[in-house]
Length: 339
Image (cartoon, rainbow, N blue to C red; front, side, top):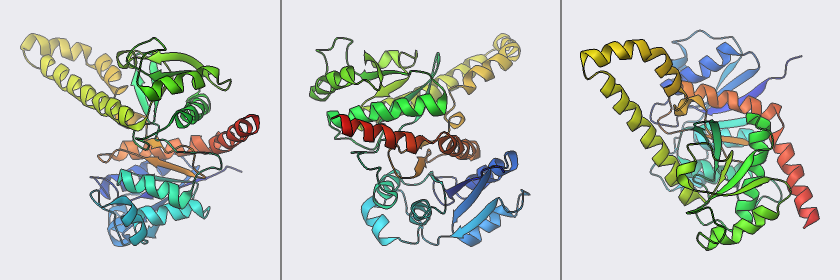
């Protein structure tokens, strides 16, 4: 009998909710029979969107959550006061094992706070990091952390490296993934206090394939599979990555359309160009999992369209099938026993 992964999706989160969120959910269940989606949000609005589509009966269920946490709201206060919001209701479904995962394009702060206070951390995990997949010249890498822990300590970064390695090997399929710490040079003696203190911990860790420091310019070339940093640095890298990617795509398109000759050349090159540019589109990789929790929470971009929502739902299936939480629990337990 086929195992079905139950994914609670925040139908009210993000700039394009509920329309694009609902479409993404419909596309997910229409393509695969091993998924059931709970659309969590304002029931009337969600049902109105669902009327536009045909989809397999029973694979989408609407869960009413009349309140919405807005992007600008203080996260802690919002989680405490809006118990009937789509984020809180969805997180509680994961906590109570009514859903296997929760996906949201809503408030990053609320998702981070809710993940830690409602779903809860795996025993032994000090800080759960956000870990998005980023495209590189040679494939893709995991950037960990990109926004959850600005004031991280060396022992936190060590755990990030371990969890990132587990994710890359079991979800993405990279054997013995190369782990590097973001630095301003390749030499061990370079970097700020956090990097200098973390470097020897990573070097001595037997659970990871540590390859040393990585400078930011080497990240797009695929210099490592797991890129370790604290959240301030990670968020700057991620935002610059996204901004530069969209700028380059825009400039390339503009150049190709600038003259008659370039338009003819563009027509010939278009199939190959589309295939190449597609690898740098954020919606191809789903969202960023908040690793180290008792259940799976995935944060997608606030501007997510249907395709990114669909891929984030697929991501949840792989995460569950590969038993990522169970592996993390076992690895952390072994590390504590050996310390």
